[in-house]
Image (cartoon, rainbow, N blue to C red; front, top):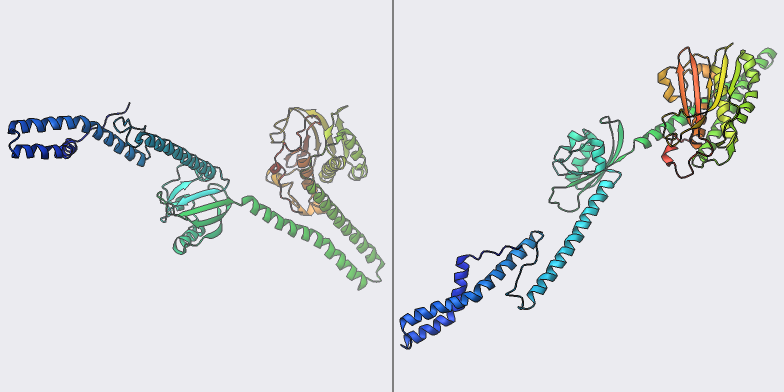
Length: 484
């Protein structure tokens, strides 16, 4: 219900006097000519004032209501159109006001929609957005910024949130020179991260005091991949250069001082053959890794009998087991459901794990390979949608691996004991190949080891009928330190 506006007495009196002024002049003329008694003059004028008030008061009330209505609209208040019954026929004023009301409501809704959409857009941007004033006080942030740096960031000094001199200096340069800047910086807290910052001057004056817009992109993963690529190139070059240098040195010796030394020639040729074989293994492993990475996002579709692969690969290690007097024992169930995969790649997994176990186990011990269907699954995103999996594990009785080394065992060229790995003919790529094959097959590998107690490498693969279909798994689950 609308409240009838109060008309100031002074306004009403002034209006009545203006309206009654012509009547006052006529009555005054009759009084001066003696045609009208003074008392009748007073009574007449008073009556005219009362009659004028009957028309003036509703008019002033409508005008006052209209004034309040326009003022409320100018202040973006939601109000109903006023009741202008006295002015309803004056130039279709009520209709015009109704149209104004509808237009204002439509414009307001459109503006609110635009503002809401922009708020949502800013908040859903994946990059961090921070807006400050010229004093480097935070005015506004988006959700990504709050997720990283915490809530309640507004009205706090930016340096308190991001205490980095490179960023602060770049912002100062933008404030002084009015030209955008880009800078990369590293932060330890709240977590070690690398950021790429784009700093721009706010294009228009803002009532909120926004003058600087800072966009931060988290490039931690990108930097990590760049470092790992550089390490990979350095390691690969070193691994190839070392046997090449040995071969070249022996060739020069055989051409020179040892040209006629038959004993030295035989020994040198044996070492050269070993070095050439080492290079051949390294190149083959690099090519295997490259091939696996090329197909990393293609889910295999063939049915694979893992028991057949295990029995076939066992035969390849009979000579190596005999050389170290190692017993290779299989503990297999009679049947296993098929898994989805590629024979050669899964055979490479079995081959690498068995080969490592035999290389690093102590002489006169046994290596045990177990395969079965299990419902005890590792806590890994690839396994969370499954209730069962095919697992095979390879257990050795070697020196074991210290706990701090286990997380890095699947990195390329990572070795716990470099000299020992080279002595047994390892390239440092076997477990990296296993990891990439399992990524492609939606599989998981776990490692359990204790120093002087040996190690157990366990692989879990989905059953053929349970595996997720292509496209169900996010690509970043495959993401790794892809180097080739």
